[in-house]
Amino acid sequence: MRYFLLIVGFLLAFSSYGQNLLVKYSEGFITSEQRLKELPEAIRSERVKKKFYNLTVDVKHGISYYGNDENTKNTNYSTENKSETQQDDHIQITNTKIIVDIKNTEKFYYKDFGNNEMIFEYFNADQLFHGKDFLQNWNWQITDEIKVINGYTCKKALADWVEHDAQFTAWFTEDIPVNAGPEKFDGLPGLILYVGTPYYEYSAISIKEVKNKVEILKPDFKNKKTFTHKEITEIIKQKINNLRSSSITTQEGDKTITTETIIYKN
Image 1 (cartoon, rainbow, N blue to C red):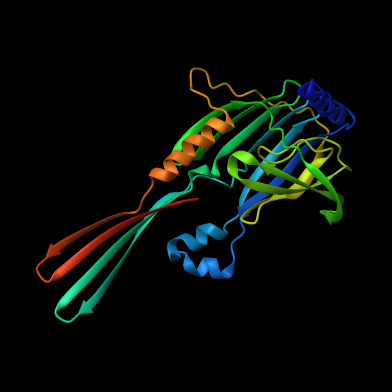
Image 2: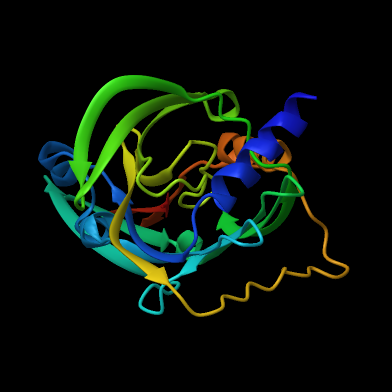
């Protein structure tokens, strides 16, 4: 009964708004200057880069699709730093290889609000996940705080995501009464223009009404294995627990060579 009421609420909000939407979002880390200085130089530039995604909303059919902007693509590279330290007649050589893995820049989220269905795909922990799940039950707590974003009056809402031990802050506008938002976020009585944690944020940078017909095709994973959000979270946690920096030390004459590999996951 609870999910039935939620779905009815989604459809009523969508049906009350006449236009389809195209919303462009930027995503990126929130990193202090001190934290940036502590990161290896090879990582800093990637850390501050913004990634861009488009949200298309088919209001009539209660469907949305969030996917990559054409300028946001996968990037993978590695870099090596080598240093030598003289200690009396002994030379210590440290060779550090940093592997930067940001495959999760490419992803999509398809939502069918009428059928309480989410289909998604993204990289994490060096694995491409294909997902099928219900829409997330965020249990947003709407506050009295108000501010203007991109010319729209917005209200603040808070939600906890227990599986990730995280709290999200969202700003949504009732001026556009659709329950859509970036990525996996939705469920508020208005378009979500901002979602953030202390470390990561999603921000709407342009909003356009689309008068022409919008056709969003349902993704088909065919015979591929799919996971729920909860299942993916457990897999990622296990991989993180198993991830360790590797270090190998060898002796060559008067030289001790330490080779250390640090894997950086975005």
